[in-house]
Each structure stands twice: as structure tokens, then as C-alpha cells.
Length: 348
Image 1 (cartoon, rainbow, N blue to C red):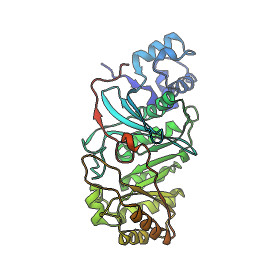
Image 2 (image 1 turned 120 degrees about the horizontal axis):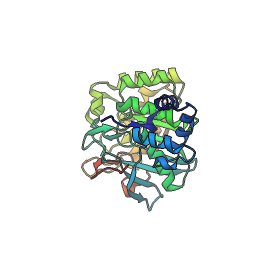
Image 3 (image 1 turned 60 degrees about the horizontal axis):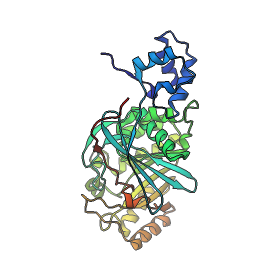
């Protein structure tokens, strides 16, 4: 039996080629593409498409969709965490956060994660699979539909390592920014990576205009290797070299994420070592008090340690902020999202 095509993961020109199989004119691809990016759930909703074409599409393709399994709202800051069920029974989480500049959605890029970072809940059960471009788009479309909010920014910082699902993530980014769809500027998108150097180098060549956020979390190989297995393959110096190349190729400032862990990476000496390594780089350092994860023993740095750390980095001429923790009461903060397997998929 021929596998049905994933329409929402197609570029407009691919849709046009797909329609040629049925003797349909290419201009209809533009109409169908627009419908697919309006959070529709069935072909019957395409009201300006003929019934005969809708039937052909239904027979040969499918419209991806996700189902809200659970919706939690923070009593502290109104952050919303969604547990979404995918069509094959996998489950992922997305987080909708409100800022003074607009509403930002943190999306997942994989069902699980194989990176093994020692302070993160997302990697505890390993990796099942990467998400398709359509499944990433669906998080944006259906979160906006449910909340009634216009999502102005997207961060690829949920479950999974985006660059470990490189092709699907790049396809998602191109679809997200397509003028015929959501048409979001990629300057409003941040992609977070734990440091897959070869993929950072590939991404730099695309010059997409997005913000690269690098999960650094340590100033040297000894500490970083203990926290992040990826560092055994690409050490701190190799990672920072790739970051400088990205800066040179794109002109886009890099954001370094640094989880502040009490007694592990938060000393004044650690700050000085980090400052020396980043000195002169066009970057931003985002200090993140590490969040509680039941299975992990790490505790967040004290406010005094964070303040001292920040002051040292500022002394090196670096731009430094301390991330505001959102959704902590619903386990929606950095490092707290989890991959679970749901029972049964979403009906198509």
C-alpha cells in the first residue's frame, strides 16, 4: 500500500508537482498551501477547492494535526504548557509565554532526546524519533488557535536537539517564514543547540537570519564533559570556533545559555575563565538558574553567586542577563519538559 504524502511538510513548488499527478493546474498549490497553514483539520474545510480534488487529496495524502492531551496554566505568570498527542501516539510538550514584546512559543523538535545532558528532563527516556516539519508547524498553529493569541516569536528550545533533526528543522523554518503561510520573520526565531559543530557549520552557510542559542553551561572541558556528553566529541574550543565562524558568516549575534548550578559551574573563577574565552565576541550571555528536575540532584546557584558571576562577565565587556523563570509551578521552565508515550494516536 502506497504511503500517503504529508502535505503540510511540502513547499509550494512541491505541492505544485504533487498536483500535476492528478492533472491539476499548479496555481491551486498556492490555495492549498494557504489552507494548510490555517490550522485546518480536514480537507472539507478547503471551501474553495473542488470536491473532486479534495477527494483525490484525501486518497493520496493527509493533513497532519496534533491533539491537546493536557493544558496547564501557571498561577504565577499565565504561562501555558501544552501536552500534545501526535498522530502515531507520541507525545511532546510546547510552552506559550507572554513577554512585553509579544507571545513566544517554545516548541519541541524531537520526541525525546539522545544528547544526555545531565540537568535536563527531556533526555531521561532517550530519543524515539525526530518530528516532521508539519509536526513543528502544528505546535505553532494549534497553540495559536487554542490561545487566541498571535504568536510573534518561536524558540526551538523544547524537547529534543534541533540540529540532530537538521533537515526537518530547516524545512520547518523555511515553511514558517514562507509568505504564503505564517510568514514569520526568522529574526523572530531562536534555535538552541547543545553544540553539534558540523551542523552549526552547515547552518551558517544558509544565512537564515535566526538567532543561534548555544547551550554552553561551562567554561572548560572538564566541567562541560561532566554535564554534557556532546562535549566529548566537540570540546569547548571547537564549539566556540564554530560559533565565531557562524558570527562571521551571518553577522548575527550568538546567545550563550549558561545554567547556573550551585557548586558546579558558578564560581568567580569559572566566570573569569568564561569571560576570557568570550571576550571580544559579539554575543549575549543568558544566565539561567538551573530548574528542579525530580531525577536530578542539581540545585540552582544562590542569588549572590549569580550576581557575582554576572558582574565578572560584565567586566569583560560582555552583555549579560539573568533569565526570568516562567511556568515553574507547572514544570514548564528550561530543562523541565518531558517526553512521554501516549496511548493511541490522533484520528485522521
